Every structure is written in C-alpha cells, then in structure tokens.
Image (tube, rainbow, N blue to C red; front, side, top):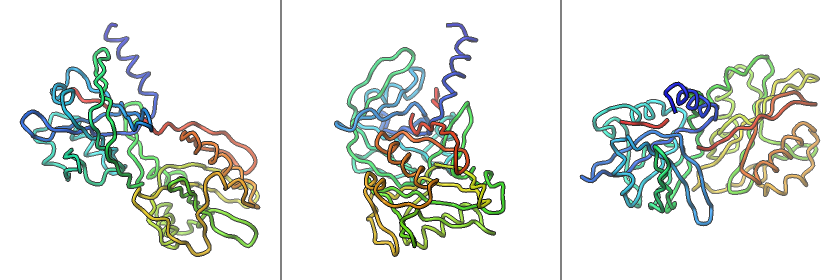
Length: 313
C-alpha cells in the first residue's frame, strides 16, 4: 500500500472513537517502560482476557512481547499530559509521572480511570504490529471519566458537558450504576433518578452536590442523554455514573439500590425518564451504550463505543 493510501486508511480508522491507555511493563534491565495506545479492547470475561497492539518498529517491542506480565492503564480525562509523555521520545518517562507497583509488580499510573494487571497469555503476529493478549489477574476501576480520542485529537466527554448548556433551566440527572444495581429515589408518586437544577452553578458542581447529598462515592462517566422538555422549558443532561470497584452500596435516604433488570417494574410517572431507563436496561445487558439527543417526545440515539495512539519510539 502506498503512503497516500496508508494515510487515508489511518484517517478512516480514526473515525472510531476510543479511549486512551498507557501500556506498561519492565525492560530487560528491570526499568519501567510504557507506551500510549488506543488499540485496546476487552476479549473475554471467562477467562478474563484483553488485548492491545504494539508497533513492530517500537523500541519497546522486544520487551513487551517477551515479558511475563504487563499492565493497561486507562487514562482519566485530566491525564492528557500523561498520554503525551508516553507517546513522545522522552528519557525516563516515569520520572515525569506518579506511579506505583501493583500486586504483580507491574507499573501502575496513579489517578488512572482504571487499570488491569495481566499475565501474558499469547502474542499474535499481525502485519506491522503484534497483538498482546493478556489474562487479567488484578484490576481496579475508580469510576472516573476516561480520556477520549477521535480523528487525531483528544476529547473529554464529561468536561465538554458545560458547553451543552443553552438555556436558563438546566436539570442535571445522575444515572448511577454499581455492580448491577442502579440507584433510584422515591418520589411522591413512584420513583425517579437523583437530579438537581443547575441554577447559578455549573454542571460539574451540580453533580458534586448530588453525590454529596446522597453521601456516596461516585463519578460521572459520560453523557447518556441530552433532551429538552419543551412544555416545562427545561434542558436535561443525564450522566451515566459509576462507583469505584471497591465501593460499598451504602444506604441512601429516600433512595434505593435496585437490580437493573428490576427497574422496568418500578412506577415512573415521568414518561421521558421511563423511556430513558428502559433504554438503559437494554444497553446495560450488552454493555454497549448510546447517547440520546432530542426532546421529551422523540429523538435519536447515537452509538458511543467505550472500547479500544500508538507510539513508535
């Protein structure tokens, strides 16, 4: 394939929105090494497998393909600088970041959205790359929003929410899910989701206030729904939120943790909210979510793929 065709192919691949990861291990001298990659994907739950690819031109190629263990660090929204450090020719990259050793001695980056320690399961030759398939031996998710990558640039799904505010009456809602349970609040008639009017604050401040009132440790992931209630003249922004993997489901005043599949049986007088919850039940069952844009009566769902930059230095 000629250079122009390769560039067009690369641009076409870039149409797929991904997260950003840093893959880490140790070199033959026992020094920590790592590279930025968005070629990451889950493979299997049983056994727990994932994959990431590495360019054969990489200076780290031999170390990664011969290591016994490696780690995948999913970067959080505020870690653009970390992504840049591990995708450029920088001496001693780890001196520029905060990190620690995991249970299986792999280098783990502090403040990542999630991390996975893996034993090398298999290395697959794949053209100008090799695919590293890892068996997940330990992991943790902080529930913080991840850093996105699209058409050669970063995007931050949560932080960009501030730009969506276009009217005076904005309502922020938190759809909080943890270990197959979703948090609902009891209303005078039926159930609803935790929400708050933005008023003179920001979207992020309103979400923090929701979490504080509920007294739970949760983080916003990505925007799940943006819709206008034309009758009430309100704009609604719903965030899909998560708790860290080690968080307990605490008792919430006027609230209740409900199995996701049981949500459909709850009485929800708000028809728009009921439609949103029904969609969440369907999408949660397959782990593939979309973003709804519209109003209280109709709209469209755009798929958001929350899965799988690659360095050559």
